[in-house]
Length: 235
Image 1 (cartoon, rainbow, N blue to C red):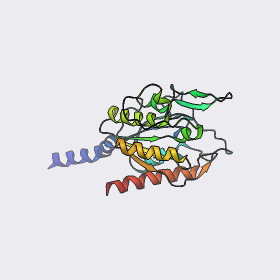
Image 2 (cartoon, one colour):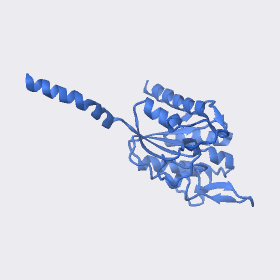
Image 3 (cartoon, one colour):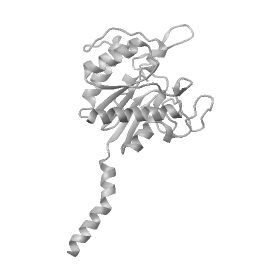
Image 4 (tube, helix red, strand yellow):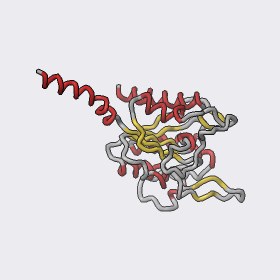
């Protein structure tokens, strides 16, 4: 009897540790919306949200107020890796320079970073915003045999990204977060390609923003909308 009680007590003491170890891990592949100074991997990635923040641009004053930190903490997950990079596009085409020429983002695009997400159970891809803002070439729908040039246009680049990620991260839940107020051709393309590739997409509803980026309120709304989608999926 004494041995049984000791074993039971040890089991109870170890349980919290076991639960922590068994918590699902989350990785993020994103742009400025998902950044926060000091939490990016690699730590050389450009960020939008800083510890010493500019109140004229954002009221997000803590990493705890980012959408991903709220979602992870409030739903019992743990962070694996956040590979977000401010200003980046999904395709390899970036913003135009002063001469009107598109920049080459092949060293920082979502495609370039997709294999550096650790070993997560869940991946959130939060992109397409800069592709929309920069006015990158849309291209044609293409689901195989991509050329290097294809990856400089949005549609073939996105299908390549999602196809590759499904192969690189088998048995991992992958969700694409679709921002608000994007060009309709971007919205349509994301939905069409996600459905073709078998990737869940979460269409965000109106969220609070400052300077085009989620405010503190917007961050909370994003977290809540993701939670609602995932809860409904389980039903």
